[in-house]
Each structure stands twice: as C-alpha cells, then as structure tokens.
Amino acid sequence: MLNPPLDKLKEKVNSKYLIVTLAAKRAREMQDHPDVKLNDRYLSYKPVGQSLEEIAAGKIHITSEHPEE
Image (cartoon, rainbow, N blue to C red; front, side):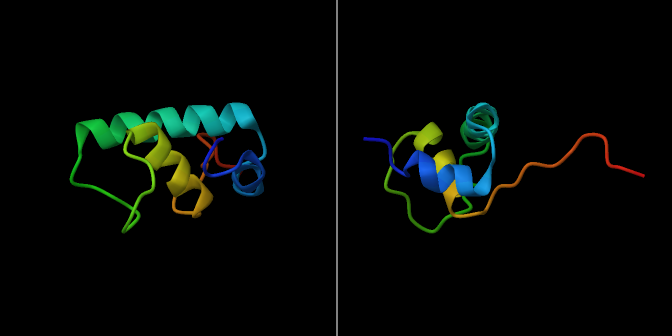
C-alpha cells in the first residue's frame, strides 16, 4: 500500500505524472544533499518515499518555469 495515499498527494498536485516527476527530482536532491531534510520525521527509509511524504505534507510545490506576465 502506498504511503502517503495517492488521494492525499493529488490534493497537493493535480497530475500523477507531475507527482512522479516532482518526487524523482526531490529524491535526487536528497541523495546529493543528504543533510537537507524538510520533514522532522519520515515513515519511509528510501528517498523516493521520503519525497512523497514531503509532497503530501505540502513542503514541496510545483513552480512554473514560465511565469505569466
């Protein structure tokens, strides 16, 4: 079973494809900089699971590369 649930993740990010992309990018950041943690405590041991927990907690947001003028 996925923890956090997909329903909770989709409350923060509309698309499951964006969730996957965002989690993968954050997991890479966590591997490169293991001292930077956004949550105090994680249920998951692996970086991808930890990044999903951060998304569900609202610590990570999608930003547009092309801000509207």
